[in-house]
View 1: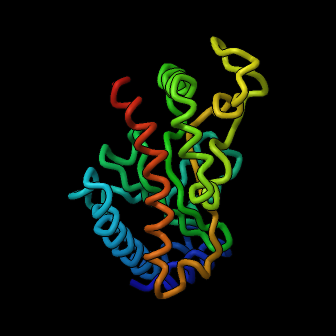
View 2: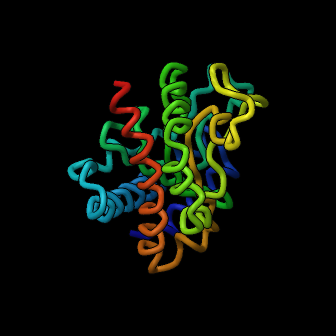
Length: 221
């Protein structure tokens, strides 16, 4: 796989985000897309060594479309300027936690978790954290985990969620509006010839968090 080809195309697309340019450079897009699919295939193979649930997942089912949904957005540029893939045993639209890779020049990351869970599921996840706070803290406050994932969630309530005590000493873990983690990385990380090994180290740490969340999600469903 050639990650540099992906970055080169995405940089050019960011500078020329219009249908005319894209259509005249579709061959470049298809080449970048093929390289990204090969990357996902390699990731699936390696992740399956420590997470058997994703064995047999196909790369093409993990890839997101490059076309933006502009119906409700003021930004009418037609294309995303990144390539993203979500390796998830239940499919990329599932509430289950999986393994996400996001390649975008200057904004790359490895991430995962339960993004935008419906309110009943979010309440169940909060309850699981509350009821098992020692186990949860043993995962997310482990230095080996925190060096990659220093923050749990992206958006937060300003106070305790309904039904939970305001004086809970670890309230920050209940104020998340989604249970996600992300590790932002420089482009050079993925351009290194041996990036797969540190990538697996990061995803292995994330699996501990995902297992905790998926246990509750399985019960909820």
